[in-house]
Image 1 (tube, one colour):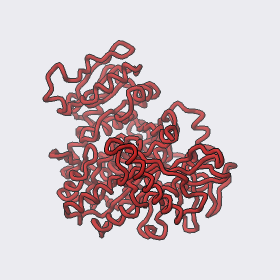
Image 2: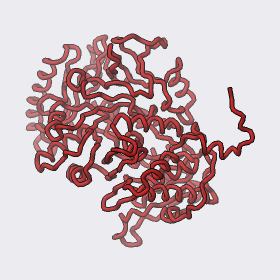
Image 3: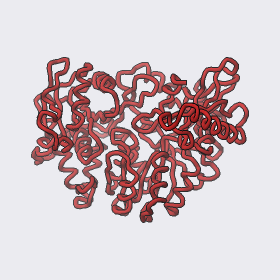
Image 4: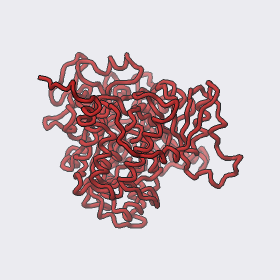
Length: 561
């Protein structure tokens, strides 16, 4: 059955029925116009202001003579700040695709992403103009640059300030706009554009720790569904008790953007934005702003526990303490229990392609199933599949696959990757694991991180969980290194607080201390792991190579060792 709608204005019909990212913000602004939506340092912005600014940016972009067409990307190279949000939502409201870019990448990598995505318009912080200039020198084809004045160069001499006009790309240069001019665009009549719920609104390039990153595309409907699912699972209540979220994870990343910031804004809560992580600033803001939800990497939580022990703050407002992206040592969890005894400690897991989080570890799994990922989100089906496309019963190991409304629309410009990812009617994650009889997901490893030793497969994640709690271990990563007999040897790469760095001791002193600490770690692991799984050696480093979002780059460690 189909309704007869031919006599209806197509724009009217679209406006009445669509499910878009921009409209989700509008709903919050209409419900809570005078409520504080965003706190950025000393600056506070209401929902009415955020909505107005997003509408202004949308109109300002559309009015440009060389504006990208609907469905085309606009890149965003902006640090965590209030302005990121009206830029993001403004692009979404204009029907264009938001392309947030990791500003910790090299100029060559940024140039590659801009050209791969065919993004000719870039919104950039003034402090990052040298980075964009270098990307253009590396071959990025950019026609229009919108500059956000951060004040970072206010004290510099005029000759020292980054100059957008000075950059020259391979096509002869670009036109410069100022973000404040876009924000000043008049907002009068309703912006009447046809934007389908199934139109792509966001392109996020994956971390690319082993190869060139892929641009994962997400539709309006996928993001709204995934964001609302996250809002429910973190306990945000529409208009009643949506809470206050502090975000210091970068907004260019799927976790900071879709898992954290949007759920709070879509539900009418308050978002406290910080650029970068500083444990003192985070704890002070938690106390001052009565933060209810915070998500951090395990290394962040370890620093917060140490700072709270040094100088205690009132953290009684914290209701949910989330962590993600790496193994959490038991000693850090114990410290979190002490500093926030009434808060839920939640592990959230997922991947860019499925608008995370896709699984949450509930409180009741904390002790009996702490090594698990927890249960799947209610808006995505999660199963285990073998190489032939058969769905496996509980307890059998295979690839974790997904179905659901917030699965990616596909990878940009990667037909072969799309064919591989959507085999057998499911999205293939590349993660290996199993589900138990209660439907709890247990992640074993990434396919590429499985260690093949002595003819058997060893999960690097399982070994990391044990080594992380060994004496003297601050952080660790476990990899396979070439071995004449075993094929690959299980090797722990460790950052230790007991082994001095190379510039703090002589080579002989460091070697002697390292040997003693290594013996302790190996003995600790052998007591808790099988002979096959226990590390054969330990390598000590002064720092583990990571992406800007905290993922350890195992490919670099494999090359190093």
